[in-house]
Length: 391
Image 1 (cartoon, one colour):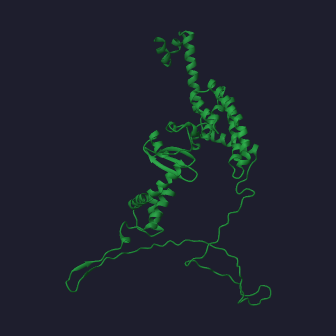
Image 2 (image 1 turned 90 degrees about the vertical axis):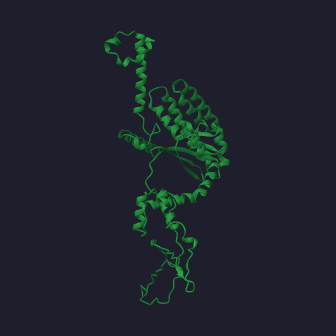
Image 3 (image 1 turned 90 degrees about the horizontal axis):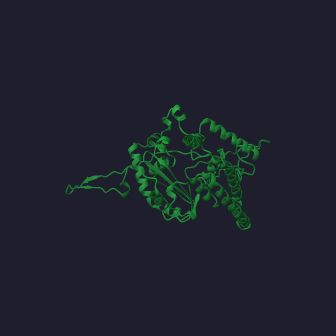
């Protein structure tokens, strides 16, 4: 008991008291100090390349190091100039059919440039066409007037009946959709949306009215959101993630090939993950957040970006894990070189057998790395490498 108290309170001991301790206690203290130093050193060397931190959180030294590594990689694999690459098809703005509000201006020469003969009456069946698009924003206000008329015979006052279009709020469908586009898709604030509608569209509106239009659009889009969730949850592949949103909320997202679902929840636990995933039975890709552990491991793929960062963290260490990290990163790059031949449309039947032939060799390597990791890595990282072999 005295030994445990001594080891936990060694920081409060003076140098003279430490010199009086036996060699066994000093070895325990030194070992604990080295472990703490190693942990702090690893935390100090963390950046966006070897952890889950964002690139914006890197210090200037880490950013300079990352740029140097990118330049070195470009020098090895060749540099690529900015802009369109050779073979890229030019994007041409297509010509549109003219409508009733469009204007066509013909530029016809009056005289021949060579001999001076008049060209009146001549026609070009296929003239060169160049279109210039513009938009004209005008306010369109519909005023409904309800009249109350006195009967000339009995003097009874009869009020008119407004049509159904006059019911509801003071703004039409186009204003509601434009408000949803600005605040929802373009992430414009409600106050700036008010400024836009007042100055460019000449529409009197308040910040509270913008918020009310958002609520109307949300209620109208609920059936569509439910259909999107059904499409996403019935997909064969999906990517899920979450991030903090505001002071006490979490923004969750499920991204599939044909649909993406965003949901705001109060928490970050398994119950909220279940509400987002629902009846999803495909292959789910996520990070190692415990909220996704309920999903079957046979269909749960860990994010390769997180795995590669872990490999980089192993390489940055000075322990035996450096050699394993280099081997794992090399194998991961090989997997990604083989992936296009597997997923390329029209050639899956030709190249898929070759990829299957190479898969057992890579799986044996992953198993070998896993066994070596058990001897020199922490328990939580072994789980990552066990899941990484499923490619």
